[in-house]
Image (cartoon, rainbow, N blue to C red):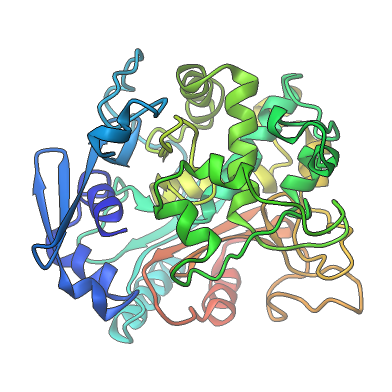
Length: 419
């Protein structure tokens, strides 16, 4: 975990060794026993001179653990495998700014100062309305061009990518029989719709304790999507919601197989998603099978994450002048923010958390925020709120071990957003 996260933080976010150590230590004091060294694009993590793990960074691929030479032949892709594609080149300047009021800007500055004085370590606060940035503020050492770790915000990016594919006629989300490995058993009943809503019924433990499924999947030797593929069925598909990073990585594996491998996925991601959406800094890292780690390993600037949220607020249209040719079918967007039909918890749509559902058996996520709002949420309190009634998106990125006061902070911001 130290090698992987430190390599990405150093090479993608440009963080100092001190900041990386502080971030890792939030998870456990045990991380203080690890010695981390960076040598060009290779990061090593050593535990008391007993064991060393290396991770390597490559542009457009991200960071990957370097496998032992004895197992490298069995992998479809490793940290040393060359891929035939071209880099994106220089980052384009962001488009769409409309700083209308000092009131909103001063509020964002004040909130980020209060957050960091109280130890919340907020790194970016940004407000977007109708595709224009109307306010933004950044913590020490962070700028509008800093790519920040999204953790599970990446799940919503994968859902939007699926929506783009369906708009282009490449997806039938109600189809079953998704993987050859599931043929002949009850997992063949699972649909993409089930995976999008995390009601697939697969057994998966998401509690991040040592030895749990999510820890083994993200930091173990088995490629993430392959680990998820091997999970047994526990519930009838569609009947039980269970938050699972494995479900998202299965979506990523299906995309990988549907588009025909790593190079084609990366080409599609660039040409059909990040370039049209004007999110040049978005990077989703790969597992050892060359599959996007769609559950967790996404990086982007605050502006990038905001533009993904704005797609929901704009019903899939990139801009007002292009509503006749939506980037994502508005019907798909409307389905994405509908409650799932599980029996236990319906507050989840297509890889996105819903606020008000209008059903007595489920409470709102955030009672003091707009009833029509929904959220992209990630570990360490990454939060992107979409408020369709105001056409607004609020982004908070940071590294918090304790809950972020989202209702108080976002409520104040909503009151300050220009009409």
